[in-house]
Length: 266
Ligand code: G3P
Ligand code: CA
Image (cartoon, rainbow, N blue to C red):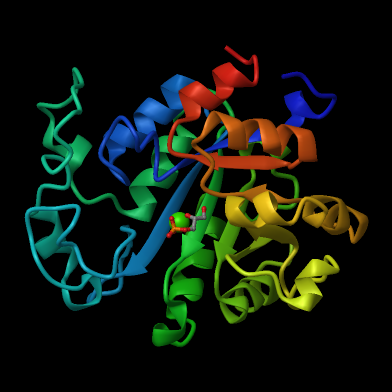
């Protein structure tokens, strides 16, 4: 499948190269960078002692050998856990280094990207931020500033985007750092969204791939309203083809190597 927009589609590694390596670990992100991903997606949550860590679920039970809610654990508690061995198919030369499968702080991920040796973008998702009344966003914005990522002069390839299902969270981010693009994630199409209209403070539409399967005009309408479209989570080759046909701007996938190959970029 070829298409005029094909080469401009950014490939974003969802939780790292998470089909092959344990999600949200340094191992998964190193692999995604090696595979050529344009950007890295991660979810951030706040620990009990105020650190932003990259964990998807509310609790650590599924992806580590520990138990409990991230919000009830301190960073030192999380650092004692193994976030790699639940993923039984993974083999890496770096597997022996515990850092590769320890809990990943957002700070460590930002360091990795800063030292990647090539421009790599970021798509950071705030998880359940309403519970923290702005603390997630405040700490996130502080980190972005520290790493120079809120600078309007940041080139497109190294840009960071903040994503959320919470319009309120995106509104907070937009108010603090208006230059950083925000992505409004959604699994449902409201009449407003159908017309390409996003909540205040959101700049990019972030529909689930299911939305595009049943609403083939969604991308066109969003573009007409001036919004890019970043689609998740696109792993099936037929869905990649659909994204190409519809002219989406970014594909968020657990399989960056395979998607890049399908797009003719490897
Ligand atoms: O990239 C957006 C996507 O990650 C949202 O869903 O549950 O995988 O965080 P989830
Ligand atoms: Ca996510």
